[in-house]
Amino acid sequence: MAEDEPKPTQLDMPLVLDEDLTKQMRLRVESLKRRGRKRQDGEKLLQPAESVYRIDFIQQQRLQFERWDVVLDKPGKVTITGTSQIWTPDLTNLMTRQLLDPAAIFWRKEDSEAMDWNEADALEFGERLSELAKIRKVMYFLITFSEGVEPANLKASVVFSRL
Image 1 (cartoon, rainbow, N blue to C red):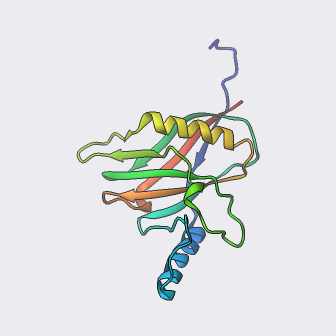
Image 2: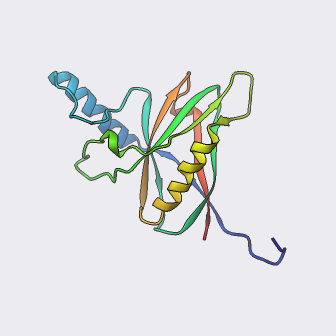
C-alpha cells in the first residue's frame, strides 16, 4: 500500500454479554423443569456453561472481516456459535436449526499466554459475519465456556474494516 493512500477504517466490535437474554433463556429451562415438561422438538435450551452475547452494529454497513480478538485471562476453552435468530420481544424459542456453522473455538493451554484457535472455521465464521453486518443491527452468539473458564475470564471482539 502506498503511504499516501488512506488506510481502511477498522472497527473493533466487542461481543457483549447479554445478561437479560441469558437470564430469560435460563428461566425457560427452569420453567420446563418445574412443570416436568420437555423442550419443543428442535429447541435449543441454554446449558449452564453457556451465555448469550451480542454485537451491536451501529448501522447496516459493508464490512470486511479482519480478525477475531479473543483473550482468556486463564487456561480454558470457549466455543462461539452464531445464531441466525433475530430475537423478538416475546423471546421466541431458539431452535437448533438457527445455530450457524461453523463455530469458532478458542483455547489457552496451561503454562501459555498465547491463544490457539480453529483457524479455518473461525475465519469462515468471520466472513459470514461480514455478510450479516449488511442486513443486521444486532448479531447474537451462544458462547460455551469449558475447562474452567467463565464469562469473567473472556474478552472478545471481532475486528472489521469498512469497505
